[in-house]
Amino acid sequence: MIPQNVHVGAFVSCATQALAPAAQVAGTRSGSAIDVSQFQSGVLVANIGATSGTPTTLSVTYSLESSANGTDGWTAVTDLDGVALAVQSTAASKAVELDFSLQFLKADHGHLRVKEVVAFTGGTAPTLVTGVTLVLGGGQRLPV
Image (cartoon, rainbow, N blue to C red; front, side, top):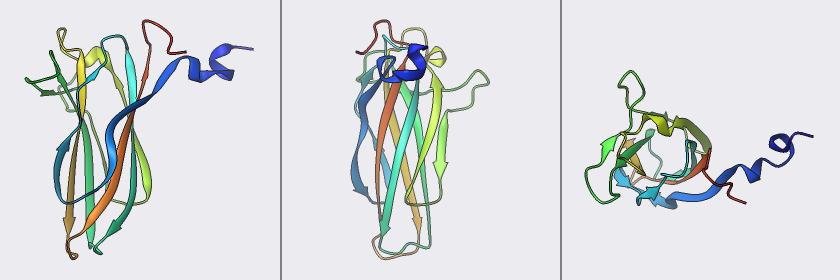
C-alpha cells in the first residue's frame, strides 16, 4: 500500500490552532503568528458554528497575512495574479476551507496569521461562534 493513502497523518501537521473557537461580535480579529518556514503548503479550515441574536444575514471572511518576523509588517497573502487569498461564508453551522501554497509568500516572510472579518445585518447583539485550524503540509521533516 502507498503510505500517503493509508497514513495521511504522517505527512501533515493538523495541530495548529490559528483562531481559538469563540463567540464573535461584528468586527475583525487576527490570530497569533505561526512559523510556517518549514512547510510548503496548507489548508485553512474554518468551523463556523451557530449564531445568536437572530441576525437577518451574516458574513464571515477569512484571509491570510504574512510577516518576516511574526510581529509587524503584516501583508495580505496574494496569489500569482495579486488577488488576496480569502474564503467567505454567508451561512452558519458549516465548515469552509482555503487551500494555499506557501510559495506565494514574500521571500523573507516565514510567519502567517489568519484574519477574520465578521459582519451582521439586523438582530439584537448578534454573535457567531467560529474557530480556525491550519493544516500544514510539505514539511522539511515529517510531523510524526
